[in-house]
Image (tube, rainbow, N blue to C red; front, top):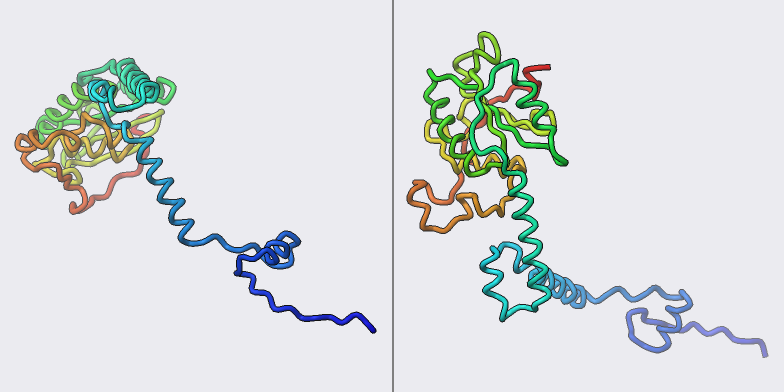
Length: 255
């Protein structure tokens, strides 16, 4: 009698010993992972990540207050990390005021200065005009910004001194340099808030250009609600609804 061949129906989704044997020989495909198992794994990963980063935004004093609640070695690791960040910021904090410059000084004080340091230095240049209301406003705000963020170099140069016959209507012009290049520039304060521009608007620029972290505790938007009244607008930043203006190409004024 010849060997008979039997057709055996197999449900590849069943969890049976026979199916395991077939899968091990590649006869039927591996069973796809359960969606519920994938969701549980994603949830566990999210919980672990939230737990691992729960101390990231705390100050040293707040970390010390948690000594009885957190693992000692884990807490010490975060304290050392935070102290290293403070030391790094302190080493970079070497400016602290606005530097008046002339055209012959521009290359050294701005372009070359922005190349210094392992990661370069951020340099803000105000091309100013005392006859322009917005320029006087920006000068005041930049003085405050220089004190608050001493790791940023801020320079002021009269616009007509920097570029002969520079249009008065383009004042103030704010240019941001980093590693020898123009990263961003603003012609007047139209994009920032016009005559109502505030320090918070300039801080938004610092965040948008990655000069400071959005988690930086010095930012007005990250400070307690008690400081909102002085600012006059709360924590809301008004960039989204403002009408943009055309910016000139990112060409350096001085080769």
